[in-house]
Image 1 (cartoon, rainbow over the protein chains, first blue to last red):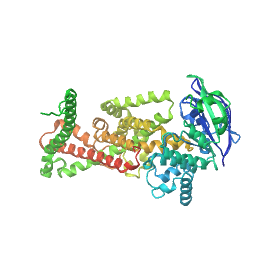
Image 2 (tube, rainbow over the protein chains, first blue to last red):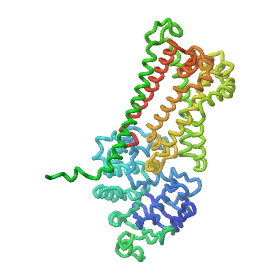
Image 3 (tube, rainbow over the protein chains, first blue to last red):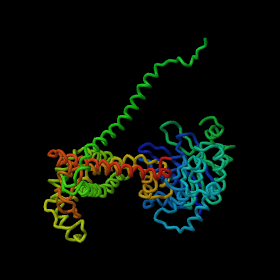
Image 4 (cartoon, one colour):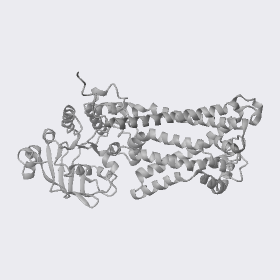
Length: 259
Length: 310
């Protein structure tokens, strides 16, 4: 069920301002791809265009194509709701629904669109999703307690469980560890390594070591200056990007000379 | 001799601190005293009505049989208002906060707030002159088709000055309260959770149900209860709109009375025991409103653990 994404000539605008320019990238199925780059270079904005979450931001528009296994997300008649149920997203700050129990949080996406699910199927799904997010052993005795009572790292894994439960083809992660402590970060990174067996994972990160640890391929984004659009500078195997990049700016960034 | 250097510091900031804390504490005590004084006044002034010979009171059968019908009338009028105003108010609030284009949302919000600024006597006159006659054909229809229900029993009032009209006027009056309060709450719903719902593939309505409404729950209850408080205590509009009478089940016939209107209409000519009787009615209204607020607090606190606050 893992799917690939092909982006061609993608531009993102906030009103008249072009935030991201001319991105072409192919993201293979069952891989982890990391987006790195300095703040404001458009990597998070670009990530959001991969499941049309940028539409939540007033004034944001997109030109170009994003193909999910060959189907363009931006074809007229494509409902963003369908897109998002196939391309899930995990956010920077853990955001479990505070009024729902842990169990209901996992099932939140599954119960959408008036889908019915039997109790035993729901129990199985809750267990498998929580196991897949390495959270089951910590919460199995308190599934009916509110998700907001968990620690930050547990909440983030709950959000991943919730995303997995919908069985998406692709999972986007927008700096999923930046609000977490090192131990929780490690837990999430281990999880990402396991997830690529079943999913295509795209992760935005500020942490270059993290990109080096978890990803197969890395894309480096940069801006020429304030007011200029962000661009994809270089996209290659992670090992190549970090050891032998072909562009000078990439080398400067990954070696810590700026950013 | 050794002195503690810490005992004598710059004391200039302390005066201001002391003044402020005294002022804040006084304000807190004052509000309690006011409430207590009002309750005491009501109780002392109402006492004769409770202790008097039942035959001397209006109706001649004691205080309970006097107050009972108008308590029911008050509750019915307020209930009609809340039942009509809550869904409309929440709908308008959601439209403004989550559906309307930005250019439309702000002016619409102002218009709703403007509704709250109209004096209640204006609503009364509007209900009396405009709304009541307009509603008469509707009442005829209700009576013809649903007349078997006691609430739509005939004969229909030809002036339209009925309980249902009063309820509709009250609904229009509490609508801005419910709308503007719940709109504020809806706008505060955390974007974090809205995005979480959307990213799972929720439609806009599902997103609202998953993240906005649960967050706004307590706020919605407060908004409705505030509206209910206004509807229970509203005097002028009911006094003008309702053609009063004894308690009857039909909402589209002349009759019924509310406590606030009963007091307002009779107070100018009341003295002695009649005065005590009206004040006692006021005491009952005070108790009802207090109870409504306490129930609202209880409902809100019951779901604290799962509230959006933690």
